[in-house]
Amino acid sequence: MRSVWVFKSIIVVLLITSQITIIAYSSFTNSVETEFASSNIEIGYSSTRALSPSQGGFTLPKVSESNVIIDGIVSPSEYVVSYVETKTNMLIYWEHDGEILTIGLVSPATGWLAFGIGSEMNNSNMIIGGYASGSNYCVDLVGIDRFHANDTDQAGTDDIIACESTEEATTTTLEFMFPFDSGDSLDSILTVDITYDMFIAFSASDNIIDNHGFRGRSDIMSVFIDSDEYIPELNIEKFDKSIPLVVDSMVTVDGIISAEEYPRSFIDTLTGIDVFWEHNSENFTIGLVAPGTGWVALGIGSNMQDSTMYMGGVENSNTYCVGLDGLENWLHEEDDTNDILECAASETDDETTLEFTIPMNTTDTLDTVLEVQKVYQMFLGYHESSDDRTQIHTAHSDVFTVLVMPKAQSIETFMTFQSETVVEFNETINFEIELSDENGSLTDVPVVFFMESQFGEVILATTSTDTNGKANANYSNPYLLNEHTFGARSLEMVVVKSGEVFAYQSSQQKQEIIFLERIENDDRAEYIRLSRIGLLVVFWIIGIIIWGGFGYVYYQLYQIFKMTNEDIEEIEKIETSAEDTGGI
Image (cartoon, rainbow, N blue to C red; front, side):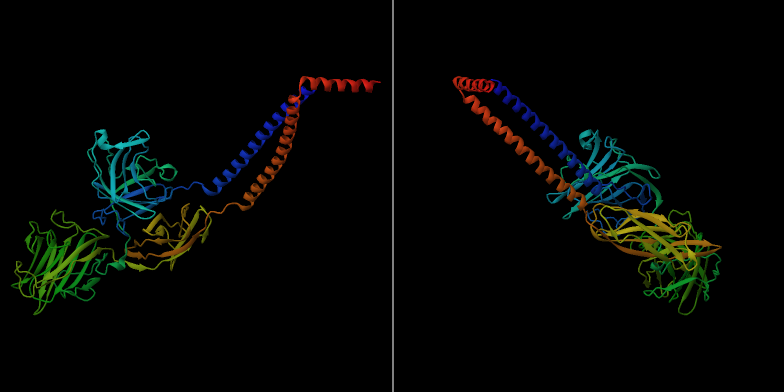
């Protein structure tokens, strides 16, 4: 019986040893897996901070006339500004007119897109939309705790003014309009010159109940709703009919135009009218020479109806000059107030010269207010022989676009652009430009850093040059691969120095940058792989030895259990006899 207990003790020891071995192997394997996984995280998923144009916040600009069409398609220059939110890689397009918010969003997925006003999900004002089953959808929601519900299910109203969306192979575009004050207590009330917390999100699913998950939500964005009307880049060369600013005018309003009296002139080819004009920021002075002996007119507006018109000429050897309000069907009526400051006209056998000065802001509600660095539409007309102001024109011009601008000396600028040309996966790109003219570095010049995309130019940052003429920005994006075009552009800037006006031209440089695919640490991965294989071999050998011994013991036990009591007694007699014999 002693042998039986010995065998049982051996079995217990082997079982305990095997369990310890298994636990040790599992612990080591987990440590290796954890180390390898943390290596992946370090290489592939380091966080990226969104880069905004104001280096700390976004601006929602005001426009008086919008080019936006809510059709689910964002075309170049449709919105006045566009941003990239790099945490989600979504594109943001937006503007407002003081009463209505217009938003365009583009996501890198084919599911829903969301725009929210609020610092957190709870009580936020949300718009969610997308494109599914061949049609678009758009819902006005309110945040409840970490979820959301339809406004209409919470005693509110659906206040989306317009909404359209489209979907491509890998992107979704959503456009919508929403009022500043909908009257719904569940919606946010927006006011100009106030900063609001906003956020955007997207999903690969069109089920709006699905959570956006790791791929879909931006950080809270601080958005300033600007009350000042957005002024686009000043491109002087675009406006060949611009009205120049003069500091010391050489004009005498006498009905006679001498050489170099006006700083700018042009000929309208349809009417043959010579146009001369200037302004001093307060008054607008115009000279018109028409090929006839009847009335001559200038209109400010996009068409006859609701335009501000000025008409004059020579009748019975006397000058006449009147302000008119345009009506429909080529009709007009005299303005109740005469705001013309000066007027003179002269006439020859075949032409009429008219000169007059008007305030740029007459305070008359029927007159157009003219402001520096803004664009207006104008038109011309004349009658070849009649001074009857009810007679329809002999000829009129097309409507043309005019920029009220300073008279500026054009200054050429030069830009150098530096950045990395090859970027590792998720590496930050550093941009630096240096701006100068022929006299040296230029300070405080606005600079835009941008990226060219399939949706047009995307603004990455705006800043200004420092005292050394330099400006910097940086950008990172874990989604970009292959080659992409980045660049910088200095905005045209008008500066008045000692009574002289200088227009610094825009400069632009671009750089192709290659984004490499993610590359694992091959040496480290190979070391871990070989280590795991070696450990597996060692533990297999140990296991074979242990389980082989376990099998042998089991076999011996089996043989013992098969023995009868008589067999055991016989063995014990033999062992006793052997001991006795040994004792002799």
